[in-house]
Length: 473
Ligand code: UDX
Image (tube, rainbow, N blue to C red; front, side):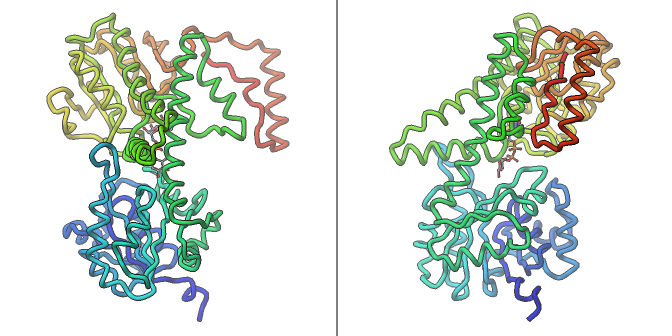
């Protein structure tokens, strides 16, 4: 048998949404034969024709390649996908249910649908984020001793899901039956990633522990940013300074209007629920959620201050509405949370986002949407940057300055080039930034600093001390 045939597995992916489609298309690109199932007939028809509606770099390309190579198919319903499968991935939604717990209705209904159709000896893999103990419960519901249930959490970020799948930091596979865990790990062997083989409960815990750690890291940074404002320090220099510590790292250190999206809020709430059920008061995590709400309120306070103390009847132009740049996802967007707080104080809101064209559900009366960033400036008492879309840096700020009523920008992402804006008369209020411009370094210090930098770069030290020559205004 050729190496390719030995590697190739017949895989069913149940649920062709964000996680399922990425998983299916990427596994097909690795050489496996993949059948993706979904309950929505029109979605299946469109995907079969290579039409991908999810905004994700390289995803459409991989789907097209998989279809053309005959390694990827789409079918309606789980029962059409599983009869021939060696491995069945469950990628159905696990939304936040009552009280913050994960709602497992979709997982349970798929299990009921496929339990009698699964071939003997196949492996069921849970990829959705599910509470600790779900693999064990799935095995109970399946009641098929000849089918192993494995936990293999995904760690995909919106906007880089394909890249994250194909170049993962790690693969985590959990199952009490070691041979089943090894079979699932082998699906990814071509990626050469570190692989953690463990029991199912630990693998399930890894996903929550990772996302909650990221949320805590951001809340910590946002709290440090607030302290920087009070003490006259600059958070960008502080985070750069701490980020060079290998134990901390530079990633996930940008202060902002609070963290959001489809995962971090859902997973932090679910982990709190799980903790409460285990009679553990996870104070640290609770505090991170409180800090996040406080951060959103703080952004509203900044806008109120910027317009002179009252938001009632003030026209405020919002730049960015999605939970981060590079996505069209508005779920749990901190930008919308801040917008709702501004609206509650009587502000008159107009917003622009490169990926939002229609009215925002739940805010149709409070937030007017425009398809032109220039229009948010007309008569605005303040502009507010809420999402870090790079194009906002290169807007025609001179023109915007002519259109606004008051030249002040609250930059909740520290995105803009304050010097450029100051030159056309804008005052820029960031998050955790020093209020006054920093002192320019003397020529002698600059020369010395660049010598330090080039020395460090040539020696390829992992932590070049470039901070030594960094001055910010
Ligand atoms: C996250 C996790 O990163 C991913 O591993 C998991 O599988 C799903 O949840 P995602 O929701 O796509 O991914 O967004 P992410 O890029 O992690 O950003 C989450 C939130 O944190 C956004 O609101 C973002 O703007 C904010 N953020 C992120 C910051 O405010 N500062 C940062 O430095 C990084």
